[in-house]
Image (cartoon, rainbow over all chains, first blue to last red; front, side):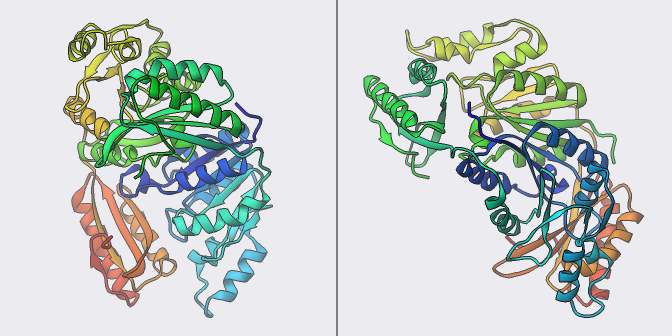
Length: 252
Length: 252
């Protein structure tokens, strides 16, 4: 659909697979990647299991231009992402001089213990991803960008990382919605519009809100003029079918 | 960790990868699977692309006891999950007599159009997953369970499906939290506790709340007595380190 660089996200953590934690990082990263013109193609959520992490990282870094990981870089026994990245790249997992020095300096004497030292231990060759919130950095290793799982720390790391990524053409969208035309009636005409705009991704999303039900149509792509033209055609179709199109997404 | 049946979730939809939509189905399914003793091992989020869906379904149905898919079974051009499941199984995609008859009956004459007929068209051999909300059913094909993307419809389908699934031993959890001991100080003792309870999955989750920051420790497994014993040891460790353990997860 576009020549933009590609990406995937790897969410690492038993807590998402167990249902304890609602992931909030995918939506943030996905939104930001679209803005800088990187095409997010896949997300995987996997457990804190060494071989699973190593094999998945190696599969994904060969398949996509960028791999973004979240989770598993804290000080406890279930934080094994960093050592798994080293294993995936076949390099030693060793103290990173800059991270080590900075973390050691931030703790009182005796408090930079073995568990915290793990957060300054990285694959050889890693580049730090600093952030404004946590003293412990993330890191990039080749095309793999390793970030925290806690959303506000992850976001701070992504903000540091984003300007360093080679992007493409931003992906923009236009939308229209109506309560007056069921999805099953607009579907045929909508398919014809999609066929006329092969460079766009046109999606149809029913909504159910206290203020009423309806369907939202969203056109996305790198060509914003095409998205606007397609949504104008969708609006005309809604009117033809007896509905009243309202520009944009429905209110939440 | 357990002999429970295994599962994966396949979230199908460009709208999650674009950042438009926050997935809400993984947490629901994950929680329910834990209750009925099915071990969720992986989640993938993929786009509405034919070959990607077919290949991913075939990979996952060979790797796990159950595959749960969400999304892509509506009436519009971007709803291609059902035909992709047929392609994955190498069977015809054809009208399902029971679904067809029921849907045809629910519409006024002339309104059961081609787009809506797609929702009654299924892989040969599919078993319907009815639901109380939408007239259009999901379906199971072998070990692949195909459900809607709209959360309340997906949940209604899962409720129909759940009693038919062979489960195992429910996965239960116990938790304790404290604001008094940083994760980096509890990590060493926590690792030793995990080593003593290899059948449990003990996780450490820092939290940041308006009411205060701290760390929550959660022990999960099929042996609830072991989880209680492990959490008692964690509580003792928190006290030893000068903290005040509070049973359960921190308030939201």
